[in-house]
Amino acid sequence: MGEDKNTILLSCSCGCSLLKLERDTSVKLYYLSHYLDSSYQQKNFYSLLKNKIKLIWLILSGKEYVFWDMIFTKEDLKKLYSFLKEDYKG
Ligand SMILES: [Zn+2]
Image (cartoon, rainbow, N blue to C red; front, top):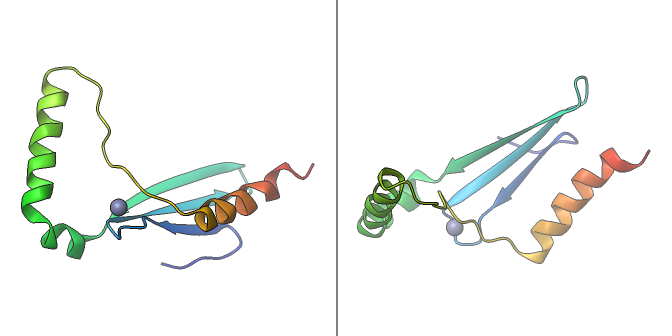
């Protein structure tokens, strides 16, 4: 998985996951994919299990929930801004 002029990768600062944003210029659509790092999941098994049980409870009880938080640095946001800016030039 790599970057090019139509694909950027943004990693969470804690290493838990990765966002991949691709643009298809032929149909002017964007595809956002969220990848979870399996090695991170294994290291934090009990913490993640607790969060998953909590998530299941929130879903079953019909409450709002956040599936997964991601932490970005200012540099990540600059990268995202530069990527998206390409489409608003005119
Ligand atoms: Zn993270």
